[in-house]
Image (cartoon, rainbow, N blue to C red):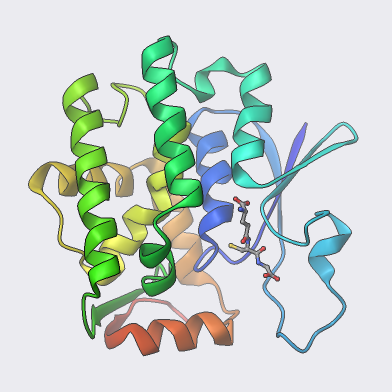
Amino acid sequence: MYELHIANMNYSSWSLRPWVLLRELDIPFIEHQHYFRPANDLSDPFNRFSPSGLVPALTDNGVTVWDSLAIAEYVYETHPAVWPEDKGARAFARSVAAEMHSGFTALRSQCGMNCGLRIRLHRMTPELTKDLKRLDALWQEGLERFGGPFLTGDRFTAVDAFFCPVAFRVQTYDLPLSEASKAYVQHLLELKSMQIWYACALREEARDLPHEEDARASGTLLADHRIHR
Ligand SMILES: N[C@@H](CCC(=O)N[C@@H](CS)C(=O)NCC(=O)O)C(=O)O
């Protein structure tokens, strides 16, 4: 049985990717949640289950896989539904997921995932505008080419899982996108597993100071939907 190690659901965008992938594909797993620790906690608790000291990490019968992209590829070896069946669609999905994995730096750094908050950004930097333009073009290309409602057609695959954290960022910061991309975001937010993740994120009591400070520095706080304040 797969065992998946994740961090706080409110903040951990990388954890969300394999979690939502396994849930949407109905692949059973045991979940282990570990909250982020203060920076001055030198015990490095994530090193106990993850060689990089980062989440997510997956264990499977003595095998440990870390990094969300490596986890997707590992799970694909047993569950081909992780990627699209068609070779061309699979190449597109993998390229796009890899681009998300290694790019979109401004989007990731200036709009940190914080599911429960609603924020009006102080300003749209040129770098963020460029990332959003590229994101919009990518999404429109996939939706048009494969017919939607997911990025490579009628089935949720790993490439959609890689954009689930972006869907929460779009919701939190009300990021400007085309109508087609907004509909894609809405489709992701309405997935059963995304609703579960969101509900769990809102219920979390733990707070991580750096994530909270980053969110407040990025713009004006409009709402905090988390249950514990
Ligand atoms: N590229 C990695 C990134 C993983 C990552 O940065 N994880 C963050 C949480 S979202 C983490 O574990 N941070 C813990 C720390 O920095 O101590 C992946 O895709 O899994």
